[in-house]
Image (cartoon, rainbow, N blue to C red; front, side, top):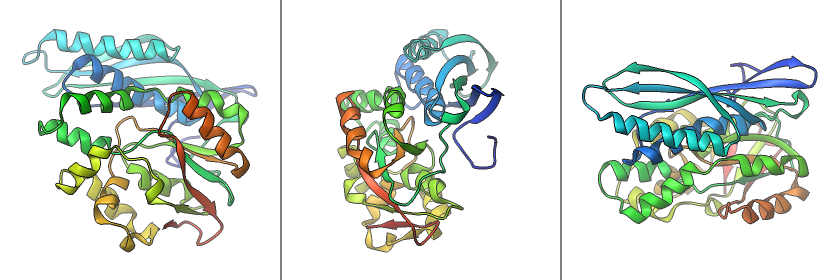
Length: 306
């Protein structure tokens, strides 16, 4: 699996019973605390392996750092946060690369493993499947508020916990349920990544916006117009895929297209297994997990907002 399906990671089969998953991701700080930033950036990069149903094996640091204008302790704390998250995932840090840059950036290149027969893609959902999400959305809006010094310490702690939580918990349950497809919710927003799940397929997707878990403060900030620029690009790019968007509150539409940092997984699961999967995820501490939609036959390649 390569670039063809715009999937979360590349997959290369080594032998009949073993494939490797490869991915890379890095970005600029989204919170002020360096340790927390390291945890979030690492969790975000590791997420692409989980989205394919795999297990992270090794990781390499990617660092761009302004050595002349920023204290080296900032980098040290960021790397410590990333390393702790890599260890939590059961993976090994095996190296990395750094360059001097005017803007600080950090992330990981991650290699994971999976049985070729168990690879999950963002395609594969069939009519009758239900769509489950595992984390609330709104982190892009909150991060924008943080940059504007509008978020209090309590909210920063809460959103940091959401973004730094690994997506390993859902994957641990995949063998117990009939999973058809999976992707993580990141830069294209919930609806953008949902569009990828049905693009070019003979399936449609009905999403119930009222059921989507949202960080409450994100609604307040969105009403104030505190929305990242990527939201509007996401909305413009995918507007032709949507049916019923004109009946949805404009603020809610902004949130549904809000670019997420280290968001949760969206999982297509057989109807009879969906409630059981949600229950197990909630037991694992993913309290926002819920069913937000269902895959239907027509109109193929469209998302219906109800």
